[in-house]
Image (tube, rainbow, N blue to C red):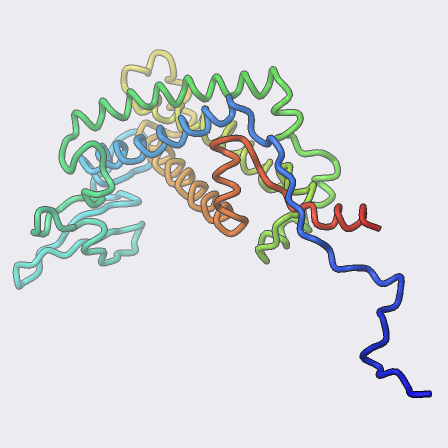
Length: 294
């Protein structure tokens, strides 16, 4: 009897078939969360641009109560060389860096201009201090009201307890979460439907830490608040210290924003964007479907 070729032998029964890709759409973000998210995004963008407009009026930062003009811890300015050309200079403590084209000196209308941050980063215009202050204070109030609304919504409703508060399981898995983030490994299936522990901690720090603190430092910078927040000004070491902390917290928000966008891009930007616009989020149910098939 003729032998059967080895490659003609039917596959053995019991072998697992390859998993089939299955996506399940869930409702991830409720409407109030989405609305307040986008209000915050707009406010932070305008607050940063108008804040840099205000900063450019005196691009230097100090510690203490008064401006010690000869000892700023951060300063942006310009030096004119022997050839008459301007060189942008940024000093951080005792370290001095040439930053022409970015900080200190940047191009405006085709010619070098002395200014802290470049014109394209400032709102509402390249040199408009009074209007920059108006924009900054107006959107600061919207930011505060929106933050109070979010805190009330989160704490009174289930959002804080269900989505933001870390659980015991979260704390036990924090090491694994750090490694996964470092290796750009993102959760799949049911795990993708909820925030991981690093997301929860970051949101808590930014929303309930950075947010209130940057508002308080902004108020502490105003001489009109001495009678109300004089204790806070003394606590942080003076009005110039409050201005420095306000500036650092603003760039903390920028760092959070950049990391936030990066994570959204590497984990599936279209899906993440849809979830914060429509609330709908697709999760990969491949393994779940495979287990059901078995």
